[in-house]
Image (tube, rainbow, N blue to C red; front, side, top):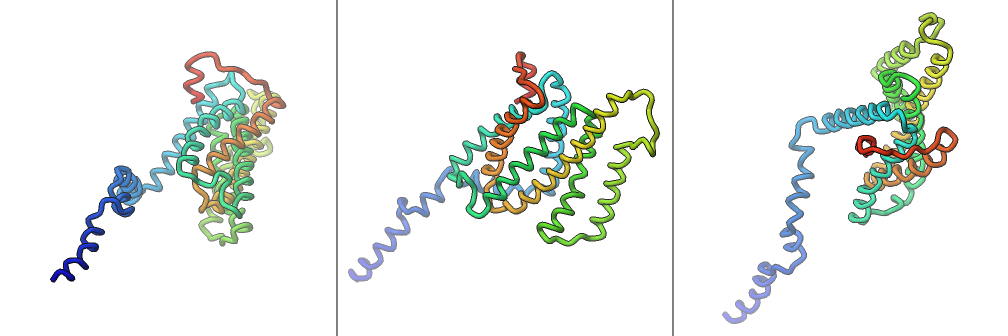
Length: 265
């Protein structure tokens, strides 16, 4: 009887122990929060679509702000935004102990994503100053056509009839927005200087769509790299490249009022 009692004591002590790592993890106050956040995509219907709509809305608002801040260079606005964007993602990267330079084997893709993404936003922000916001955004939204083309050649994904149909419709829409003179005629209300600016804006918007598409292809290759690391390095690339490009395009203008700072942030 004593032998049975002695042999069963350790089992009882182990199960009741509060010092085991498993119990420590399960009793952590952060675990319910983590579980709640992880369950959001499953609990919210069409969560991915809602995130996409929210992203498009926020991007449109950010683009509108570029038009409102006419007294600041477009590239400078982009630099300020990425400085504020860098701070939280840098903190998250350090707090989560992610690999600071990304995963080995994916660093070239991370570099290409940063460069192409920066080129896309710089050209798009410059286009906002040269043509109507709606036209520039519509041309920029033609990027899915170029994504399909890049995905076919780089990722070896097949092109379907749906891709061809939607791509053709998109190209027709781009053609209508460009309003070439040989089809729509010359508008006397738009003098030559304005027309030249519009042509440059069209070229910049289409360039932004192409570089954005290539950036998304590289982002697809980085599916194992933590998002905070990608955004952190993307922000660094924008700040560095933006500061190198800005002196050749314009000059720094220091924001002087609270209204301007609030829109920048």
